[in-house]
Amino acid sequence: MHIVRRRGWEIPEHMVTPEAVMTNRRGLLGGSLALAFAGTAYAEEAGPPRNPAFEAGRALTAEKDATTYNNFYEFSDDKDLWREAQALKLRPWSIRLDGMVKQPRSIDIDDLLKQVAPEERIYRHRCVEAWAMTVPWTGFPLSKLLAIAEPLASAKFVVFETQVDKKTMPGLSAPWYPWPYVEALTMAEAANDLAFISTGLYGKPLPPQNGAPLRLTVPWKYGFKSAKSLVKISFTETRPKTFWEAIQPAEYGFWANVNPAVSHPRWSQASERLLGSNERVPTQIYNGYGAFVAGLYDNLKSEKLFM
Ligand SMILES: Nc1nc2c(c(=O)[nH]1)N[C@H]1C(S)=C(S)[C@@H](COP(=O)(O)O)O[C@H]1N2
Ligand SMILES: [Mo]
Image (cartoon, rainbow, N blue to C red; front, side, top):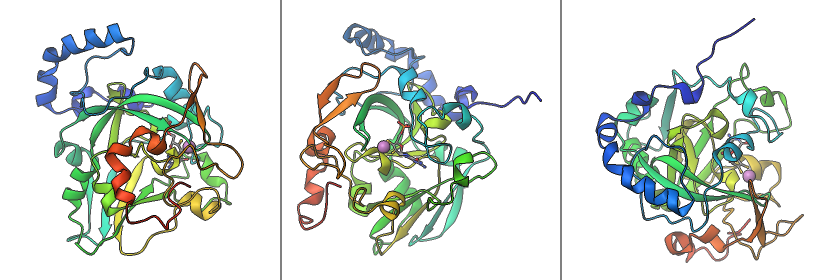
């Protein structure tokens, strides 16, 4: 049977981009010319404005590499799961905001997207497995979502939960994993300017395999912290058990800040392999974002911050 399915990148652009940004695009074309010169351009119809505060310092990964080599265990533990991931149903989609908030509720993704102004940020990404990429995300600061959720002052952690849909996610049939995929940040980490919610990639709607329609992006931490396809964001007083911590606490902890000097028990974290070229480059502490985030950990020296 031939099933016609609307893929993530076929969603009309006006559904994900407010009118104000659409009409502003022509003014951005000069910027893309300069980028082409720098060798980091991508085939863009010009997305939302790029935030210049985040300099990646290395060439962009090819879009094809970032969208065909993925970790998304709900689909498969193979890296080439992108075909299976096209089955993810992206609409209707709502996000539950609950726990220690003023008023628990669900918000439709399109209502949410109307309340936030999209921007583009080029971030480095470092997987705990030691592969890395550099990609342009579209989205908005996580702090904007915190403001919408209205957490109580007594909340200490933000917990992110991924979609569980047995019909479209074959990986869920592996019973030894503690589904749903759960990740968490402290409130201070979540409020940090670097913490981002991604809704797009390379100026297009976020592909399912990269975590459509809404994905956490915390680039100073190992990639597993950046939970995909979020359906619930809740606020708690106590630190939750996160997915990979539940599986193997000695290898994948709560903090998981990138540090080349702290080896994974089974391999070195000193360098990383760039997707595409396979070039090995040195890994940087906090993935190079220490100026933004190192201060978050000044009073947490007794924690296992780097695993
Ligand atoms: N729900 C969910 N989120 C997830 C994962 C996953 O398996 N399931 N894998 C994580 C890991 S290990 C990495 S490295 C990144 C990979 O993101 P990418 O495929 O967009 O590069 O997603 C993270 N988020
Ligand atoms: Mo990862």
